[in-house]
Length: 156
Image (cartoon, rainbow, N blue to C red; front, top):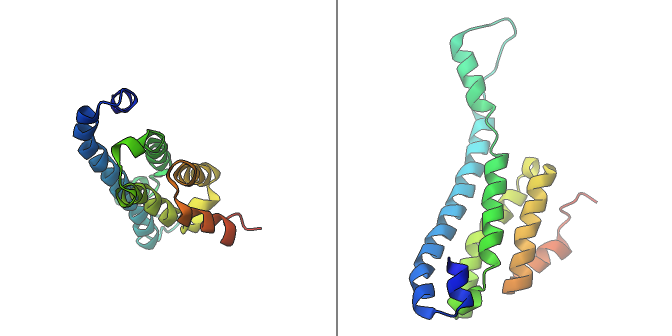
């Protein structure tokens, strides 16, 4: 719907939805931060499981520990790309405003890329790169360019 408002250059309707987009961006950032911290927490609090011990409690803990946030992270990253492909320059006129908005998407991506286990997951790594590429190409996210040039994310 916002895409139609931006294409039709209906400023009143687009400005009304600007707040919704900002909230959506914040929620996506918050979600990725929570998922990442949850994965760190699960690793640090994982119980030691002894062979031969069978009880209901350990089975419940195993179910909680084995939860994998990969699908949720990929969905959040895909949503970020869809939002960043909108013609945001019509909505976010000031450069500082646009940069702040785009940073809501790129900041959690950089945090995900600092997590070695996440970077080893090809699907997540490619989704992260896709978010950063769209930010660089469409929104002048120059800080991301130095990441690709100076950091060795592929282990080569």
